[in-house]
Image (cartoon, helix red, strand yellow):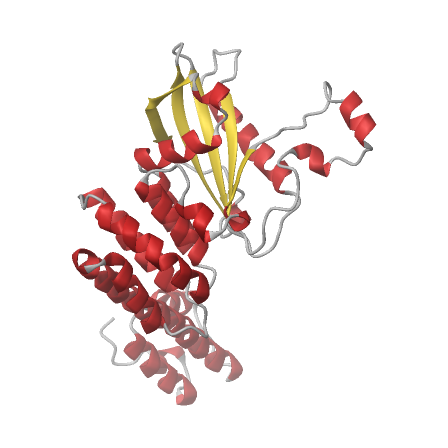
Length: 332
């Protein structure tokens, strides 16, 4: 499965310890954060998201030690759907249970479960419209829900709703500079107007950053993300001009590299679509003309990545009487 632009920027940013610590210090209640040793924070590999939802959900699992030396985890789900999903609390609970399933599988001798603190980073087209807990989905009157709280999981989670914040609020958040820049970038990706309003804040932040290799890599990912997020009716060159202003002279090369990468990705995606179409055309023409094809011939067509050769096969398929005529004189 190809990596979505949302997945790439989220994992590039929040895999950096300073960005992750900054976000978690902002979101976790103080009475919780004081029990965690953030110096031990590290990303664990893998994803717990349903396969069919990985274009809309991205996740990271952080291992962290408590101040008394116990294992604990923070599970962060990045939601970037175009519409509000009222079932998200249940999905998030299911993902947390999968973390525990993995823990029990990897620690067969244990009879205890580590704490897993759930966080939802919401980057939808609209703001979050429910209480951040599973109880918002439970069908019962408030009195009954309160009376059954001891028996039914209400599962409250920490919510960071980017759509509920203005550009000024985002720019003044108590976060590290890099984390604020990333969040402003995520917020501004929804429209050209947002990018223009966020650009002055982003330029100020970018000018303060130390340009070490991890930071430069993340900035390149952010610029590429914003270029790819441009709406069909938006001139990508205009977006590039804004990004060049944000990056300043010291970051010009990063923006230009991101633009070149976008062009190369476009070429690669275009070629991939062309190859799919050509392969389908060859087999369709032969099938329509009732020319028998062996499994070897089908496999050969399916494996071909040469558009010129596929075009040649297609021309032969129009008039050839057998598969041997299609592949005649090839050295492949």
